Amino acid sequence: MKDSRTDGMSIFDKHVAFWGSAFSNFYPCKIHVGKNWDNEPVDIDFHCSEQYFMWLKATWFHDYDIAEQILHAKTPKEAKALGRQVEGFDDEEWATVREIAMYTAVYAKFSQNEDLKEFLLSDEFKDKGFVEGSPIDGIWGVKIHYTSPNIDDENNWEGLNLLGKVLDGVREQLASEDDGDSYKEQEFERANNSLSDSQLFDGAMMACM
Image (tube, rainbow, N blue to C red; front, side, top):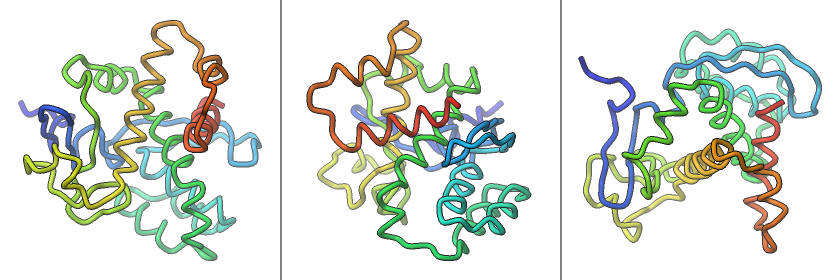
């Protein structure tokens, strides 16, 4: 029987490339959320990280009508389509927080589902970076198909691979938590934290609430 977790994934020397598989935000999982952007209590369940991410997008721009529709979306595809209808959306503003939102959703996905967490931390992927092999997405992916050997060379990439970087960060955090280390303490010990590190830490803390 085919493993849905690996369907849409290729493993190369340096990278795990995917466009689908358990690393996709479309992969079904249960996520519970207890806080919103403003640290106010909520009690919401999502059926995938894509739905959660799009809800974060809608609520960031205070489009609560679309946010409510996203909560009732039956599929990740429907949630994504609704996310594209957010009123008042500003791409430049979203670019400043989209990685926080993505980290929040992806961290919640893997931290709340033990089977997916074990999959992410598998030795099979150790020392390999994640890369979204979408041939059409230059923001979250690299515009190279996940089956192409060319994707293993970063010099060939034509995108930012933000989703791959988020997965790298979530894996590192979950591994450190399993080792009994405090991620927060590790952050404070870094003398030269980048803005990106700080933003991703904020996203992880939000996902834990």
